[in-house]
Image (cartoon, rainbow, N blue to C red; front, side, top):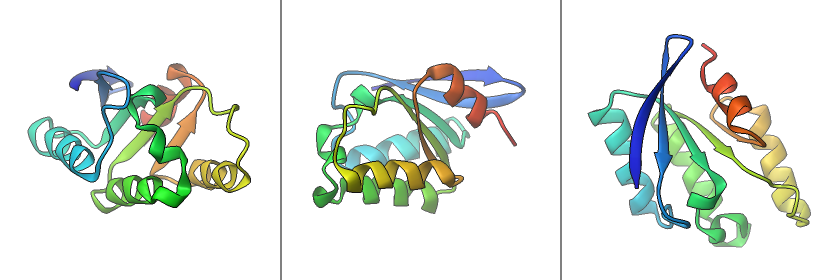
Length: 121
């Protein structure tokens, strides 16, 4: 994975790029958070849905809860962009909806919407 800093409305956002499914374990999440928070001194993160391993979208795996909890614990905002309309699981839809009501993790359809949310105070 690679991380680059974007400045938008005076706010730094760390944009993560890499191969499909690169974020696939708690260790990958902790490494990413550590790199962004401590090395880049940034607390806002933008990732594309394709970077997150598909196990995230199976709530039984616990990966979704762990990921959102880590970002909350480290007081970081995470925006995940992509198409989430293909998911038919009601529990997953409820999870995504509830996340979007919060202040820590959001699942948004476009990069522009994600950057707008991340750049807010």
